[in-house]
Amino acid sequence: MHQLSTTTHHHHHFKPDGNHHDPACRTLSTAQKLATGFPRATAVALDVSSTTELDPQIASHNLVISLVPYVHHASIIKLAIKHRVNVVTTSYVSDAIRMLDAPAKEAGIVILNEVGVDPGVDHLYAIKKIGEGKKVEISNKDLMGTAKPYFVLDGYNFVAYPNRNSLPFQEVYNIPEAETVLRGSLRYEGNPALVKALIDLGWLDTQPKEWLKTGITWAEVLQKAIGAEEPSENALVSRVEKICQFSDEAERERILSGLRWIGLFSSEPAIVRGENLLDTLCAQLEKELSYQPGERDLVVLQHKFVVEWQDGKKETFTSTLELYGEPQGYSGMAKSVGVTCDVATQLLLDGYEALSAPGVLAPYKKEICDPIRELVEREGIKLVETLV
Image (cartoon, rainbow, N blue to C red; front, side, top):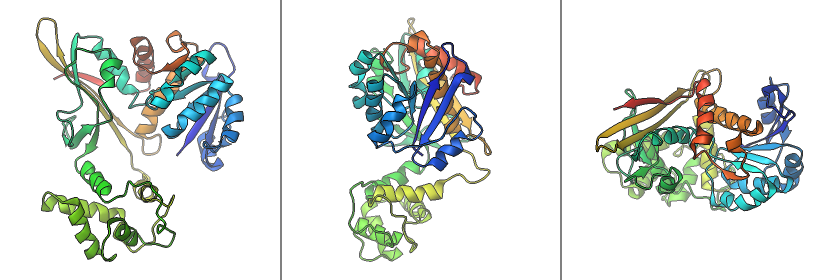
């Protein structure tokens, strides 16, 4: 779901009941669901790609929370600069956002980023622990490149792989002496291998396909995508085997079972979206992976710190978040991202000094991280620190 939230702040001294919050979504019905139960919320239908629609909405509010895909942030921020409106995002500071630092400072507005869970909560605890030691090695896993088994907590079978470029965080965290700085993602064992197969088979292709039209079956889509002789399952499997080069029979069975579960071998009509393979795959995954009544999600985050103290002693610390969603309430992801964003936004509206400096900001300093972390912990989002 794409969401843009706008907030009108009525009082100089912040009070929770002093904000009018207007959730804006592509469809009005989705926005209305978000506004239900909140008397100071007004639902808005808004096309985030339309400057004509965005401009008056941004102009009429004091702050914008941009929870839309990151590619839209820069255009939203440009309009916010035009109207001198603060912006909050939960996304990484991209090059496009970084380029707007000087214009934002000139306009006297704050562009606060990376206040979700990852990035967000991870920064809050990284900054805390790094401040306690001299030499620090941060590693979310042992090897880069291929996903490898990674132990977090008993009962979970996770693998880990690098996430984005980790090197900038050596500077961000002010640890030039660190031998290794690595940020990564945790997934259940088997997930990266299945995703790699989807990539190898062309399913992440965003280029329009003339043949990808309503009425085509999933098997026919796969046949076209991988160049199989015909859309029969035997022919598709034969071609998949040749492309993916499975390492053993067990991997072959797991991957083929996953592709079959997604429905890629079926004769059912495909849900064609955007006339490209990636959007079409996403439409199917949205249907198959949606949480059913009674189901819940899980957010797991861990820092591992290898600290070398001044006396030469080495210790390993972990900081771990294990947060389950509520089957009949908020998901763990919604809570960890939403509460962190809410707390940071509240502090910004309240004029908290560390968040008041105009320009592009992110929680990389103790003065910003500490108050956000303390308030987030009150809401039950807390990493447990352990000496291994």
